[in-house]
Length: 288
Length: 325
Picture 1 (cartoon, rainbow over the protein chains, first blue to last red):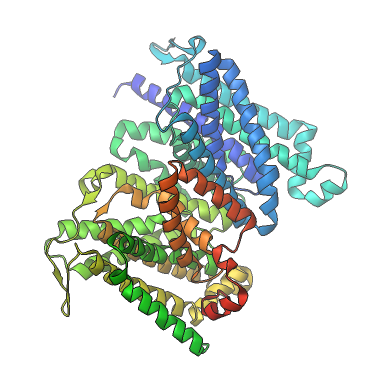
Picture 2 (cartoon, chains in turn brown, green):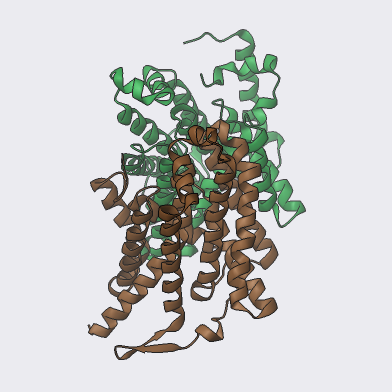
């Protein structure tokens, strides 16, 4: 096999891995901060793609879509937190999980209802179409764009959590919500913001994925399973874990398709099983 | 063991009489629906064995249902002279083995982690069913499972192309399974499982092997789900990846929560309501799944006990034999 094929395949893996990270980061964030596994996250991702599609069709402006979709989805996330999640919190984990599952189901069905039960191909915006020369071969610009967006989000998250006052408050609220509340911070509003922010990240990931993976009704479920594997392999609530696991799965699938195409669908599960045997808490998970 | 009152025994006899007479009274379409309710009842109860008794919320319960369905279908289709009951037993075995293997990974985790892992394994099996065309037929599925000629079962011969015959066979198997499950939950094993649900740390200090009890109840639930899947395959005479899909896992969640997870018999009521409700609502609107989702959210928000919670408590004490303690 030629070296250039290998490099391209590795790049493909990197791009898919970073996209996966973009989706998984919001989910990991919400889980790490609020201890809620948000299944609706995958539906938010899908909704982001469809809202982006509609904005793109209406205005022809991809950048506007890239802005509108996260705002819409983030707002919806805030509503879900305020009116559903907060109400079932007192009943415990199972009901929090069930309500996000219900939201996932309803959004998926609503999307099929509104946009139809068939794919809506999203075109790559003119500014990002075409390909560039790299070490003697061609590579699509849009894939680099996915990489760049994901890196910006990663850097932004790290900056917010490590360097800003907001980040300090959120981290403090995670370790002792009562104390932080007593110190005059509005903890429920903080959590509302975290959930809304996590949802907005899903919406952003959806728009970015639209022109790359196409926009279709099962895209939420497809992504849900991959992000679950990322979260399990990386360790719950761990951002570095999510990054490493996303890249591992991206590369694994990319080379899996190249070498054993028939088994490509199950590689991530095999990885998950292996990691669970060796480290049940995930690669970066803290405790079993 | 508690004693049964005269009224409870009378009620049980009445119920048995109604179920036995049903195919003589009902039309073929209604009998088909009732049969569907009966095997889904077993599936929903098996889900609730995990959720209500062990506190384990599975999002991938269709994995074992699908395993049972596929193994029964494949063995009847490809193994010449496959005895009929052996095919059902193989389905049960497939569910159990799947439960042991997947349970091994899952029961060590709690809450959300558990739910998520079960879903991931479910999707893994679904991907295999979808891709392994030579064995599973891919998305075309496997059809023509049931023998065309009546099957001789020693005492009676059963024609599987006859709805009434199918109804009775499925009814007998499901009632037997439900009785076994109900009894097991009242043995020391059932008590251990309840202790583990209550507080697994304390249970482990008391000397119970927490993970082993969880694995046992997981495998039992998987076994029942496998049998339900096996019966599903025989009834439909067809298996496709939808039997092992997340949609199937979702449906069983709906059934259990509709009926009420607080009692052993709640999910049976749920299965009945689910089958009738989906049949009715899908005749009104194409977007019935959307309505179903809204209903589910409303259930989780306001209506935890499910429909069995609507039965007045005086009447409910009649059914108290089914209460999860």
